[in-house]
Length: 125
Image (cartoon, rainbow, N blue to C red; front, side, top):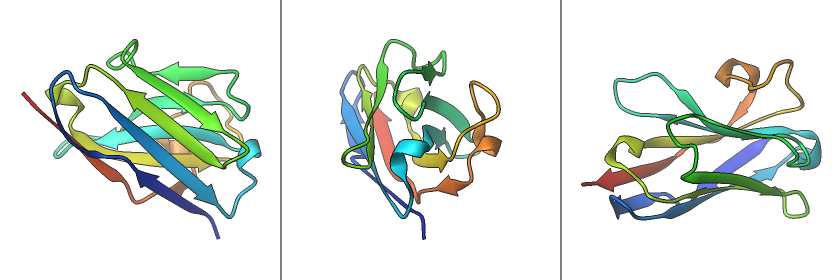
């Protein structure tokens, strides 16, 4: 069965950095579009970044553009999210998502069928 396991979350001060990881199993990772989404309390889930199967195409939410880098290592079945210059508004539960292809770009959360349990990111001012 598909398993997506996020790690790397934590508590940091504004301006700090975190690197999230998503380890995938039960799928042919290199054939899956991968994405990071986040959800803050009382808010809807939103896309943070998405990466195509081979990493040639990426998408970033305007709110994180320039501060965040999504990447993947298909040999290790792992996706990453490097987050720099973190802001309090980045505080949320961050989820890893996967799907074997998408019909639109950028894809939304509705386009992803498999999800991890999430890792909490808290940024204090």
